[in-house]
Length: 292
Image (cartoon, one colour):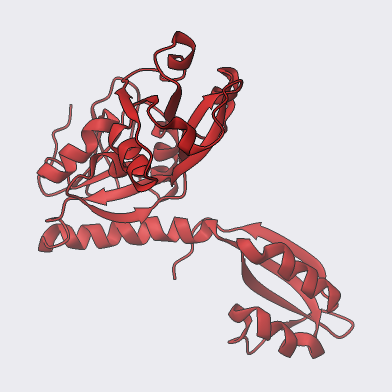
């Protein structure tokens, strides 16, 4: 069994749970080579000075804030609930979910004000209290560590506050969403001292470069197409990556071959424009990593 190296960065991730598989998948996408299986407590990355610790998700903020580990990957919901003294570095664009207020489908409660004086069961008491305080609605919070969905059926609460991603769990328990408190996703957090530690800051910068390269690639598509040479000035107006284009391979029939990247949010709108202008043979490819 290998030992944890003190000079290496140490990253705590969820041992098992909602973020586990996506976290491991993301770390491998950034090119980290390591072993992981359920009984393993920590892994040494073979191709980067990084140790990965597998712990309970609720323990990660304390490990990071105390300096036991340098970095952690957790849900934004835990940051909102516990407010630990850590530095948030990146949104990681997976593990999307929302913290919502939900009531039974047949309930006569249709507005937040209808919950005045009612009992709300939740595993997120701080977030719940803060939300209703801002809405000027007085409620009673019942902290629950297990499944909160059953509390209305048991008659011990009139509503719940819980995380949902697809809404299927709420539907299975005959609950409907009344309000959204906040949206959450996986985030990378750091001990406040790691960014000032000369040795570890160098490693952190290298690791962040890898993370950002994968995250940037998620937002773009690589496009190859043949276009009439006369429309190139028009293309450059709404495709910024073509502005520095000085030489393109001649295809045929007055067409030239160009390559570009298109942001996912505007992909279809852009493709429709270039087709209208006469683009042909459009090929779209995913981008694995993008250094910007």
